[in-house]
Length: 465
Image 1 (cartoon, rainbow, N blue to C red):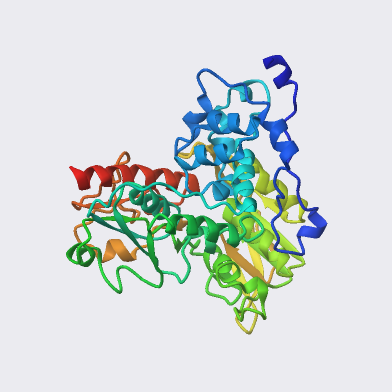
Image 2 (cartoon, rainbow, N blue to C red):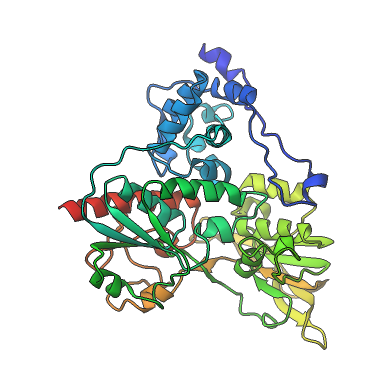
């Protein structure tokens, strides 16, 4: 039987054609049909020791949910996933399964791993299409009250898990819409916002209250929340502080941080102008500095907003790019051009203060640095000019500083991240826990969710202990 399974090729995900999708913001990946899902699920070897689970930060019973798919029991598959993950339709779309659960799949040693993420998306989408709203039996109210600061992946996960333990949970979100990076950072064509809204609605059904437009650190502080009757606080405020290169010309008109560019487009619906009156100016030639997923999102978004040419400018080679291989492939298919082993040293402007060109320098790779990637070394005298009218900086982002700044006895490290125990999220302040990007720096959605789960478990133990 196992020999028959390994002969089945990994099933490809249907997509919009590149020439079509580059002109719209509809979802690129179209999802598995039932036939494709059943064929892909049949590849699972039903391992006695399923190593795939070792790579899942939220510990989903992967063989269990795939077994339900094989039996055509899609509701059973959804229920199995939701024992550990309240955002399956999101994770099935944006999590880097290739470096997590699928990397640990036994099949991957000699063959292509089972497409675990695509199967997760299939059953989550199936549930949505059926209009099914899974109701969970909640325990009696504990009488304890928890404040969650930030409605991103870490905060939402912590909130859901705490509600399922019987605690009263109130989430304070600074923006006018919950979701964090899921709504402001990831484009519609990768993660439709209707999906995010429905997943969040499921968390609200657990009794979680979400208060938008509540900027903790300005309207109230962590200390004030504790004084107002909250028994514990979870901080999941993310990494929303953009980094710049500190090169000449970064203050010119036409220079964006990727955070601003994507927030204007996604959260503020700039791509629907003039239906939504969000100003966003994209020139004919756009350079995106960086090569992570955020950079790919920015470069692909620029084309959809009307740019004639969109470039990824990156100081290392393609092998060192931190973006998912799938995102790089999609960007290239859509016409994004890559200028590798290249980095800007200056942005030049015209007489009106707008970007007109990028002065770049060529690099070569030296010895590996602390990240394990080969260090880029500048080649003297290799500078050249690229005509450009928009530059987007996508070189990473740091922790949101507002909460740490207004909580004096909260320990932070030299990067501004909150210091918290890796296993529990416990901070230096009693009753205050933290997790996600505010602790680790910018990471993945599923890693933030894993941190939220660990913290929720520790908070529950703290509250009942």
